[in-house]
Image 1: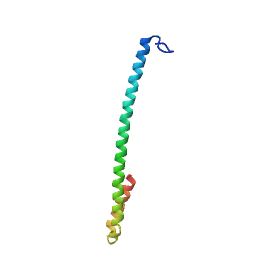
Image 2: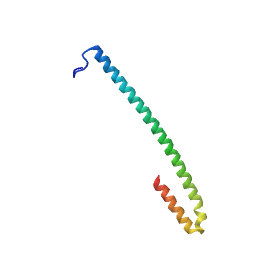
Image 3: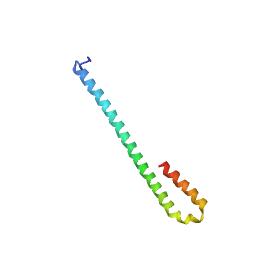
Image 4: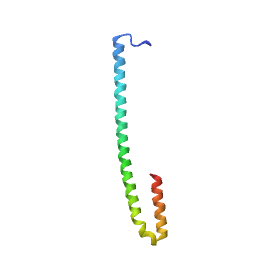
Length: 86
């Protein structure tokens, strides 16, 4: 094959086959990447739900912990750590 393109039909067919193979490989990689992206989105949604549940629990128990300042302080630190991690 010269720099302009294939010089014969067999060369052109070979080049088409190579392009089709590269195209199929790219499609497979894209499908795999989209699957991974969907998995990550699902995992992110589950983590957000867990964090929301913790935040709701913290909000609900904080008034009851007013009588236990050290426990309250420890729980606030835990809550802050969870929020920083998300």
